[in-house]
Image (cartoon, rainbow, N blue to C red):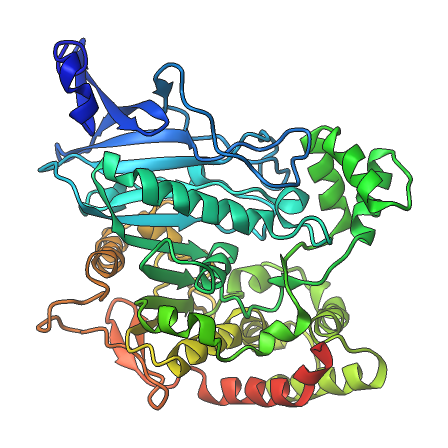
Amino acid sequence: MLCVKMLPSLVLFCALCILINDAALVQRVITSKGIIVGDEVKTSDGESYATYFGVPYAKVDEDNPFGNTSPYPRFTTPFNASDPNIMCPQVILREGGILQCLRLNIYVPRHNSHSNRPVFVWFHGGGLAFGSAGEYNATHLVQEDVIVITANYRLGPYGFLCTPDNKNQGLEDMKTALKWIKKEISAFGGDCHRITIAGESWGGSAVDYLLYEDAYFQQAIIQSGPRFSYAVSSREDTEVILKLAAILGQNTTNYRDALNYMAKSDPIQVMRAYNSLEYVFGVCENPGDFHLDLNAKYAERIRNTPIMIGVTSKETFDDIASKPDSYYATVEDEFYKSLGSVFNLKNETLRNLTDEIWKFYLKSKPISKDVMLEIIDLSSDFQENYGTERSVTNFLKMHNPRVYKYVYSYIGESPYKNVSGVGAYHTQELPMLFEWWTKLKTEEEFMMRRRVVKLWMDFVKYGNPTPNPKSSPRWLATDLNSRRYFDINLQSQMKDQLYRERMAFWEQIWSKYGQYRK
């Protein structure tokens, strides 16, 4: 045995200790909470990295799992950080999870081990209803000499109620995780002054929101999920709690009584009830907050924060191309409801808005599968593209000179690669960054992974995705005039004015109808 058992007097001075036992390396880290024991992973090329899976950063009050958390108590014995699959209660795609789910999966490089490494913190997507840190294996990222952390946060009603007593607990979980990381990451060899937060889909929206919170990070990456996305925010609503309690067997008109009943219910049953409602929780905010363009309180913070932000080229392609023909008989009514919810409209005004949008995209063509590509453009703009443009505009109006905008358009071995008009759809960049659900198949895809990983990790290291001035092509920061962006594909290049006419159309729509949200 080395370090811990042979040299006990040095333990307090060791940030990272190694135990050798039967030729297996066990990684030990001394934190303010006690000893955390991880594992070493060997890569195919002979390199290695350490993992610390399921590290708790806060404790959920099981008597009130919808409320505030408390600091996790000190470990009385070394904490065995070996379970990557702990997740918060959920029932979509996978069913399971535990209330004490506020955990981090930490990946630490071992090559030329040293301290003060940059840190990359990932918040998963999943519509606030599903997903976990364990779904994102960071083996490719950690080999770029960056510490990678994937984080859990509470989901559904446990994380995103919107009542006078409980608001945005999932966002608070993320802030708590960042506080923990800032305090403890030096023990893992990380630099608490070089933290980049990132997320995709709703995880990206969370990153956008966190830019307007107190600083526990220095850089941000927002992937297909701006805070101005159509389904991100929500208004105060206690009725949904009464409905959830009723499904679970408690009929009451007092939402606090309903919450107390839900707190004692099985979390999986609570999430099943939530899923049955087809109700979407969002970030609890004032309706008028969408119109926030400048916030003096955080202007300086945002001005000094390098930001990477972008979308895929056809965000909703997978969602819509996989629909049956019957979808086109109902899509107009569904879109009508979505617009009514977003703009707080009804009756004639809502009908006028709906007709105006359909006319712009379909040019008076009837709704059918023949206009699938037009509907994909409409829904992509409504859900992601315009919101991303709004966020970019916000950052630029705060005079941020380091906003790096992108469109990921590489389709690779997409199941739709032979479909006319195909583009990269929502989540399609994720297998380039992580070992994920979708696996790469061809040498071309593996080459693209190497390119994408380098772009992302160079941004984490240097605040610039192409820091070498001799890089070709070079990814330049955007500005209000050119609105330039980096098109990520086999032949990546800088382009100007993404979807210019469509974005101008949505700007007019919001100028005309946005007043009704107030």
